[in-house]
Image 1 (cartoon, rainbow, N blue to C red):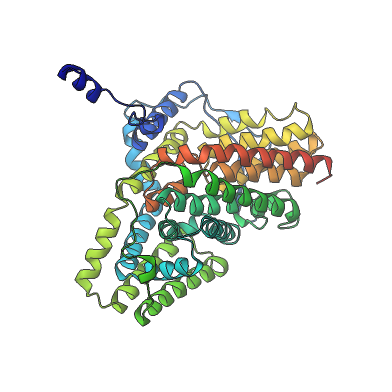
Image 2: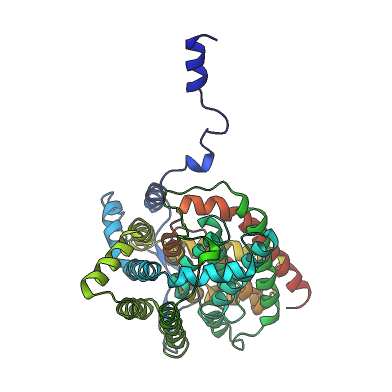
Length: 472
C-alpha cells in the first residue's frame, strides 16, 4: 500500500467516529436565542390582545368571554431582543441564585466525602456493582423515590436533590445522564401527574368549584404507570447510551473501600435535618425558591463549619461550586427572555384565546386530548402551573360545560399538558436549573427524554379517553 493511500485511509473519518446528530446540535444558548428571535418575529404576526381580570378570593382570575384585541400597541424594536436578555436574567434571578447556592452546597458535601461514602457503602452492600439486576433495582427504587418527592413536595423545591442521583448512578457504574434522568424525570413525572399537586390541581379545582384533590384515583394510576415506564426506559435505554461529558462524575475509591465515619454521619444528619426543615417550611409556611435557597445556604455554612472549614475556605468552596454551574444558570436567564418579549408585545393572551378556541368543535374524548396538547403549547409561554391555571381554567371550565365534558376531566387534561411539558420546554426554569446541577446540557437532555415523552403522553391520552367513557 502506498504512503498516500495510507494517509487517505488515516484521514478518512470512520462511521464509528463520525459525530452523531445530537453532537451537532447547537449550544443551548444558541437554540434558545433562535427561539427568542422566533418569538420576536411572532409579535409582528400575532395581534396584541388581553382578557379582563378581576380579584376573586385574593386571586387574579380571567373573566370568560372578556377577550379583546388591542389596537394601540406599537411593534417592538429589534433592539428589544437584546434588552430582553438582561430583563430575563432579572426575572429568573431566583432560579439563578438557587442554582449557584445549591452548587456551592453540594460542592462542600462532595468535599467532605460524606455523601459519596454513604452511597458507596449502600451500593456495595446491595451488590449493584456486580449485578445488572441489583443495578436495575436501585434505578427503579431511585426513580420512584424521586417521583414521590415530585408528587408530595413539588418541582422546583427538589432542585438540590439532583446531584445525589448523579452520585448514585456513578456508584452503580452508569453515566451522569442516567442519574439526571432518574432524578429530573422522576421529579417531573411525579409533579406533572400528582394527585395532590396544590400548584396545578389545587388551583384548577378551586376555579372549577370541585373538592380539593378530588378525582385522585385516575391520577394515582397515571403517575404510578408513568413512573414504572420511566424506570424501564432508564434500565433498558438510557443505561446503554454512549454518553460522554467533559466532566464525568467519578468515585474516588473502590466500592469495597467505602466506610462511614462519625463525622460523615454528623454531616449527613445536618443535611437530612436541613431537608426536613425545608419540607416543613414548604408545607406549613408556603416556602418557595428564595426560602429554600436561604435554607441551602444555611446548610452549607453549618456543614462547612462542622467539617473544620474556616470562613475564608468556606467562601472559596462555595465560589468553586457556584462556578461549576454558571453556564447552566445563565441558560435559565436567557430562556426567561422569551416570555419577556411575548409579555412586552402583549400577545400571550391572544395565543391562549386562539388555542382555547380550537377545542370546542371536537368530540368530547378527543377534546380532552386536544386540551392537553393546547395546555402544553401554552406552557411554553406561561411556564407557571398555577399561573396557567388562573389564565386558562376560567375559559376552559365553561367550555367543558358547553361540550359535555366533566370538569374533572378538563382539569386532568390541563394537568397532563402543563406538567409533562415542563420536562422539555426551554422556558421551564426549574428543569434548566436541575440540568445545570446535573451538568447535562439541554441538547443532551432532549435527545434522551423525547422518546420517553412519546410513551408517557400516549399513556396519559389513553387514560383521558378511558376516563371520559368511564364517567370520570
